[in-house]
Image 1: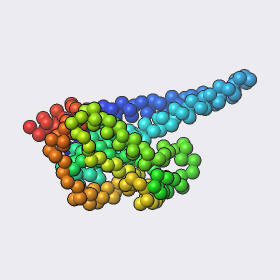
Image 2 (image 1 turned 90 degrees about the vertical axis):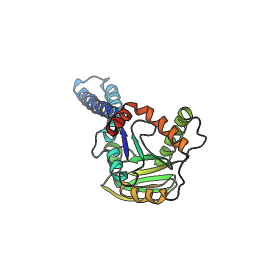
Image 3 (image 1 turned 135 degrees about the horizontal axis):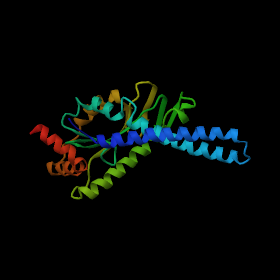
Image 4 (image 1 turned 180 degrees about the horizontal axis):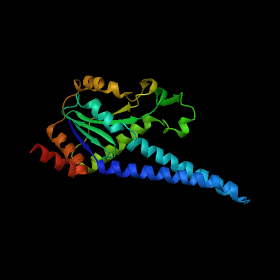
Length: 243
């Protein structure tokens, strides 16, 4: 399996996340310090500092969870797929979908979620329990993984139409992958979009690969070219290593 990862983007976004978290803490502490001013307008600035500081803290939390926290989602996927997608090309943080696997049979969008507690899905309805206030302050929200995955599919479809217009229809499927080892329970069998823990991903893909016919070679090459141009420098390194 070929892994193409935009490490420059990872480093850049990790630094932004760290700086954002630092600034948010400074703003929150500054708002707290306003208590000692005794100004009648201090309450307004305290509320403003709380709103801005909390908003920035959520941005910093999201970026650090995605680009700093170990093991990062991309590395979890690397380990989960290395034995089942030997003929695949795995793209991280380079395309409209942060994690994409190109196989001879089609395109798989891997939408990762790092969540703890109890996760339940029924169709497009998702819920999370057992995390208390961490749901708002200690980790990014669960959101709606199904709708998020569909948006990624739409974004990739637009990208393919622009960069590989000769392909009329691409077999493209999303998978929602939970990567936390500390998740308490994961009841997602009723999810409309396939969802599973990363430990189940290998077995699921092995079953699916045997059912799908390969893409016409010209379509596969067109997709590979369209995806590789976003990581041209990494592809050059790959070619140099295999030369």
